[in-house]
Image (spheres, rainbow, N blue to C red):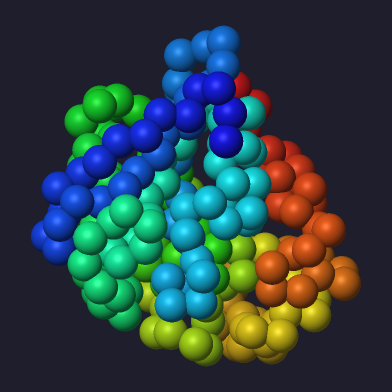
Length: 209
């Protein structure tokens, strides 16, 4: 994605997992960001445009950004596991990154199916007493998968004209949690020609360092 992208592999439960790490260009990282991609059976990968947009936003913020191809995608071994095994794989990436950058705050951002995986991971991390500092959920999978509740500071970004996950389903999931939803007018599920809004919203929502 840029001159600072590094490829690496992790030994997951289903075999080797293909990963990438993007670092800030001219400064040491101030935090860790884990980015989760959309559904593997519908072309989702860590090179998805929304995933790359989220990565760019966190690099600008000074974060070390790690993403992986879920099992069965690209060079990652295994087969799709409906979010269960994928949550385990993201937990492995979390462990790897927190060992690599000990003591740093962790943010997690996902797109579509990736939001389901991260909601599950955040729930597990919270039970372990080490929740991520904040989540960014784009094209939230509410109504399509059984999303776990998320913290009140979660950033929800959704397209007004999302044809895959209706905005009304996101409102129905967010309402009981009293979570605000940022709606991008005219945006479809993949945010064609609207990606710049995602990057701007994430950067603007983060505290100034």
